[in-house]
Amino acid sequence: MKLLILILFLFPLLALGNTEENIKDKIDQLLHLKPEEYSKVIEEYRKGFESYFGKRKAICLGEFSSNILEADEAPLNNKLTKVEKRLCLDKMKKMQTEYINSIFLARKRYLEYLHKKRVQNLIEAKALALKDLNAY
Image (cartoon, rainbow, N blue to C red; front, side):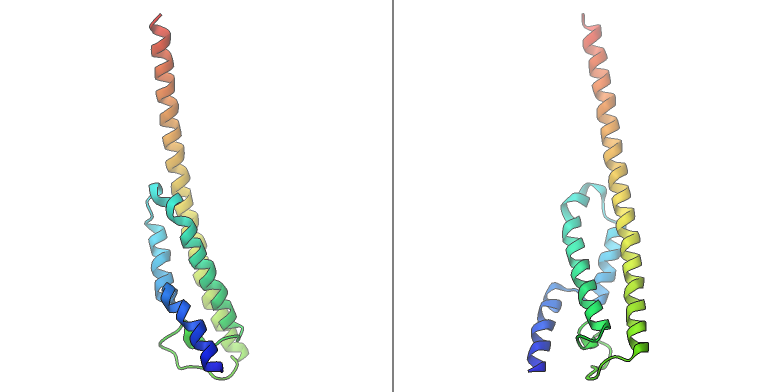
């Protein structure tokens, strides 16, 4: 029964590609995300990160075997020790910090991009208004 539950839980994780390596790649992608693409893709990124971190937390708290997210580690059949839980949570917090910093920088670039576009639109509107005024 435990094996069946583990398989049912493992398959969606692997199908979505939410492994630690993929999450790190996605964090790197956020750092290089073009501001023009931000609003199109950010919600998908956010859902993937929230899903991964929720599952990672469950693993760190001993609800699931740690081999689900860590393919290179030996499967654990017993509950994690306090030290193992602390290490797991610390690793997760480090990744969450990287995610928060990356999403902040991506959003900042997006807001700067929007601001630049709006200032340009304002300059064009001013020029058009002055042109119309001088046409009289």
